Length: 68
Image 1 (cartoon, helix red, strand yellow):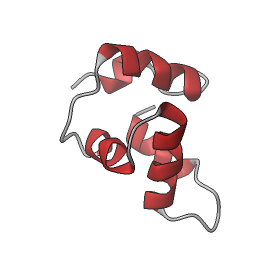
Image 2: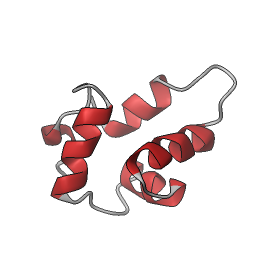
Image 3: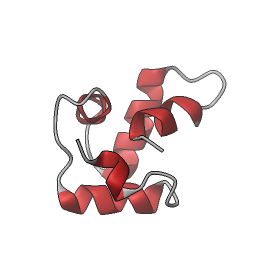
Image 4: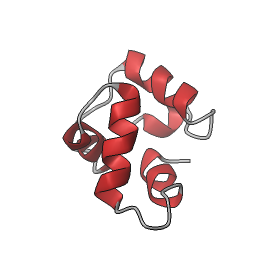
């Protein structure tokens, strides 16, 4: 599953997309803008962070899904 799909489909009912980016970023220790840039492929995700994302998403987003 792509990171974008994960973030757009796992948000709370009354949460905006940017609220979800902010919450996900806080979990990882990065800013909402950083998450947004990853989602829209404006910034590459470093390898260490890819493994954190795999862990935080429970394996729903795989390292291979973040290669572009």
